[in-house]
Image 1 (tube, rainbow, N blue to C red):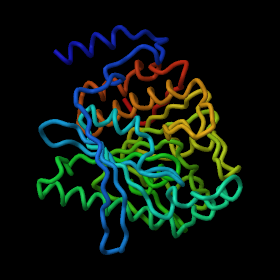
Image 2: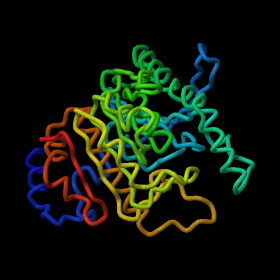
Image 3: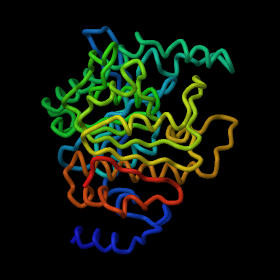
Image 4: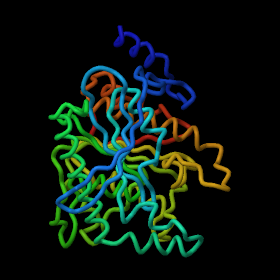
Length: 327
């Protein structure tokens, strides 16, 4: 019955489909959602990691999506994604990275806050942040084995925004240093989503740092996706990872007018958010859910739609879709 319903929906979507025409994955899923805050302690590194878990409230074990926030963020980033994913049966584990989280800028304003963020975006901070991911995966495995967390460690993916997107690419196997020889690859992660992805590393032969990644990745950015701390990062440079990664399927959505803040999903005090924010966030929740359904759960209907012309036109005119290495 579900297959027949999905087929009917696809047939109803014309070539000029817009984001206002819902697909199955645009709607809230069938699960109620529980939100739990916790702190996990990494004894080996003497490091406490704040965690927020969006958990499907139902029976069974659930595939896992680990989320990494941007520079200066926290575990409260992108709640619209946590709720949507969990409603679809994903255990969404949002990680807070001390040293590159909100503690970096709190108590500062204006240029002082920006400078603090620049100082926090150091190679040492990056390595520490990258190390949080294998610890969190270890903890998920241990809690699942103990029966205290209804997670399925055999189906784990990762998503992140900005510095968190950098963290995603590291965890999926991006190379660092001369020739891209240093790797933080964790084979337990089988798919990734990058929101505001960083440019390819020119120090590693114009993108060679990314060509070692073998997992499917969904890339999302916007035509106004400038970096708030680095004027050299232009919106078009955020397409470099999409072009560099291979040979696994790669998907890209570029939202017209989308800026760097939209994916974070948290209104900033005193700022009136642009009118397109809610539409872009809804499209992001839909596209990422579709992607993880296809690549974490093995949903054949989701994968067929993701690799079809219907997906190519799904978000027009709000967003332009591109694909590489797909049927």
